[in-house]
Length: 102
Image (tube, rainbow, N blue to C red):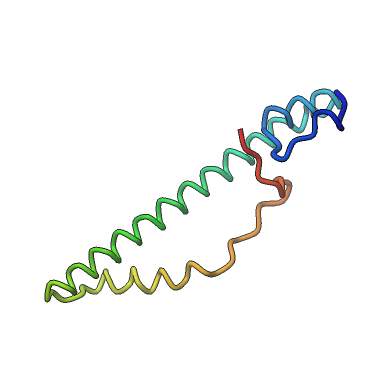
């Protein structure tokens, strides 16, 4: 592999794994795959939470617009939305700092 000819803007998990095998770093592949799986799972959960909050907020706005009242649970959804701007927790030790795509 010529690094100048094979340069890419995005590093895929497959090319990273192949490069690690070429450099005889196979022992790190399983922990790396586990960390990547955990990262993706956390990202999916965060995305689902954000979508649920958005749906709750829209439902509360519709209810308020129709003359209804905002329930206590709906208020907490709006409060939770304010917390979204907080920084995320740092990745666990030993996890990659670069997001990889397939």
